[in-house]
Length: 301
Image (cartoon, rainbow, N blue to C red):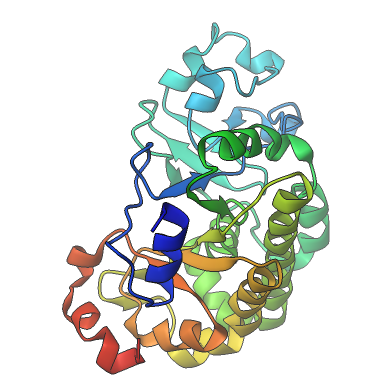
């Protein structure tokens, strides 16, 4: 089996010749491809963005000059890329605030909420919705994928982060959880908007020459003991979020993968019902492996 056949056989329980490997590097059976910020993303120039630096997920995109930030006046005191070395607040293309320590050991952590209430939701989304069909997000990564991933299972990112994670960053985590009870209609509208954006990015990868075998959605939905939502609440709000994203991937001829941190046992049946092809869990030992060992009995896999 080649890498593509091996990964597909593993996903569909069709007797792969060995366990496929997902690593960063040439020994991997999977070639992951991430979406980059737009070249037009130049925050910090308006008064309400003063002292907010650009969030590019990883500082390497600036260190390697893949992206260049046109500094506003207040930031010109930082020579070259010295701003990457200081503790700072960053803003991403969705207007979400991130706290960075200045060492690039992580992408940072969500900071203060940016969407304090829903009264200005339309204005906020008009200002802070990235263009999913901006080719500068995809061009370089598609070239790398076509060159280095031609014999690999090509896994393309669906958006930056999933709808739940982005909505939580906008609203602040506690507000976001409360929205499921106090602001249901507004939350559903926000989730719909974010879902449509993610589906459009999947279409854009293919429009600009990408050849994905699968898409990866990154959306942390739980903590060490369980998901953030009851199964009932989860199905009520997210069937037409994840269900629609999964269907879109399948309609594009690709499989759908979900990365999530946390112990998601109670909501795994929902994802199976909606047709998810694979989970990618980074912390299985932290959340316990007992449920994984009994997956066949529980979920019929």
